[in-house]
Amino acid sequence: MSAPKIAALLGAVGFFGVVVVAIRLGEFPWADYLLDAAFVCLGIAAVIIILHFLIGLWKDFTGSKRRTPLDKLFNERETIHSVGPNTLVTECVRTMSTKKIGALIVLDGERLVGIFTERDALNKVLAAGLEPGKTKVSEVMTKDPYSIPPTTTVGEAMELVTKRRFRHLPIVKNGKVLAVVSSGDLTHWLVKDQMGEVQELVDLAVGR
Image 1 (cartoon, one colour):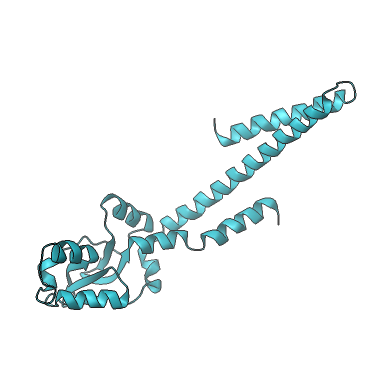
Image 2: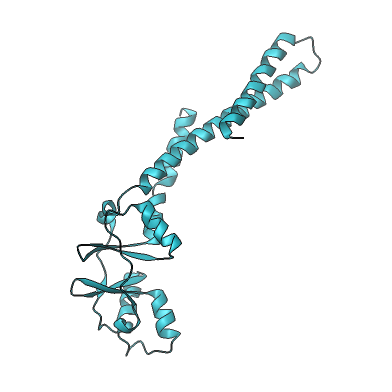
């Protein structure tokens, strides 16, 4: 049974109880208890209705954010961090550590040729027994990484990182990398100001 139907049922029970008890008040020994129970039903119905209203507003809010094109987020992104294909892994890891980022874009001129991530450093370099100071990033990078156009929505990008387990998605237009969005960026965008929005909805519902 849906929340509105439950609320309607409880509200009807509560209203009927109040009416009956009001009529028979003083004539029925348990009238006070029935009256309290009726008001409890009305209270529960009111809470269910408020929660259903809040959930509906929250779905509309998050749904609109998921439909936001990624190019609307570019102004919030930092400069793209990239390296050339001949850069040594040691330098790449040092850059990632200094900038506190999880991936570097590998560019040949302006053309995207690969992406080097923390997982590449662990699985393809350290676990493989390669020497970071002698290994070029082109030898261990993920070649021709999956990229998306700037018109991709936040929801579509979230679906990609979830289903295909991507942690970083280069955003490319006409062969040029415009930005790199991570799964963390997408999550942050979706929940940004969440507490403030929820409090506003609660205040609206209770009439503060």
